[in-house]
Image (cartoon, rainbow, N blue to C red; front, side, top):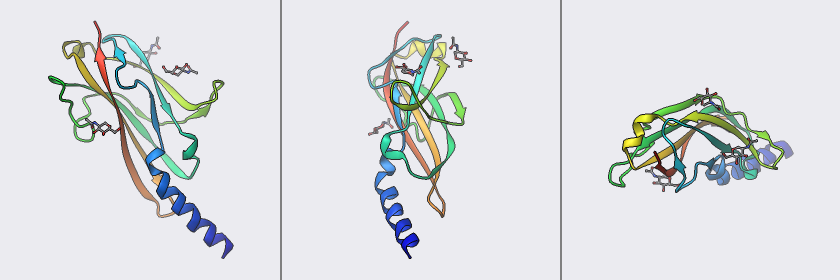
Length: 143
Ligand SMILES: *[C@@H]1O[C@H](CO)[C@@H](O)[C@H](O)[C@H]1NC(C)=O
Ligand SMILES: *[C@@H]1O[C@H](CO)[C@@H](O)[C@H](O)[C@H]1NC(C)=O
Ligand SMILES: *[C@@H]1O[C@H](CO)[C@@H](O)[C@H](O)[C@H]1NC(C)=O
């Protein structure tokens, strides 16, 4: 029974920290991205996320906004810059993250601003339950 109650406690803890499974370390709101250039995207595993959500992967995408109105990344991602595994590691600077170098598409130069999105999929608990979640940053494009 000790084992079962441990699982129950773990399941409760898992449910309450689902909101902090992943973070977009960079870009952040207000970051300036240069179309045609690489940007180092930082995908962080928060300290609070040390529980068993089996990683499926992530997608990184960027979309243009029109007159400050940005498409919802859950419905329209725009240009997909990366899709695949996410394997965060303990880094020398103390964080647990993985960096990805991606190219910002040239055609976004026409849009003044954009929305950069991180889509994350993992399998939670013993069910398991598939979890899909989104993080975003509103960015500016500089020539
Ligand atoms: C990862 O990317 C972030 C944001 O661009 C940067 O600050 C950090 O130094 C990078 N870390 C490594 C190990 O390259
Ligand atoms: C971006 O994420 C925030 C939560 O961090 C959310 O409130 C907002 O609606 C999202 N924006 C879009 C366009 O999905
Ligand atoms: C720029 O990003 C692409 C992936 O989009 C990558 O293949 C390439 O190695 C990156 N270049 C640099 C200098 O990091």
